[in-house]
Length: 79
Image (cartoon, rainbow, N blue to C red):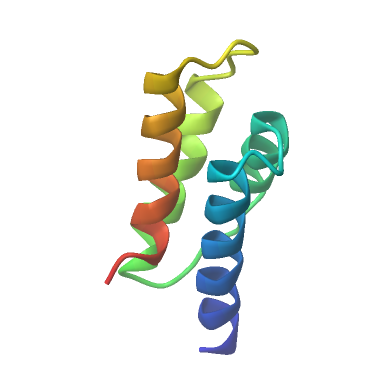
């Protein structure tokens, strides 16, 4: 369970820093695509996040893309 708790804290931190503009999208993409496997309900959300960032490797990020990025990240730590 400690590993899952660490995931949730990390996902929230990455989400908040990205939303505030304190980290770049490429850093977020690398973080998301390197996550391992986790038990449900978080496992499917982690896989979906990794897949989202693999499919969407844009250098130019508009407001809509960032909004979607943030929603995918928030899903990881959603109750």
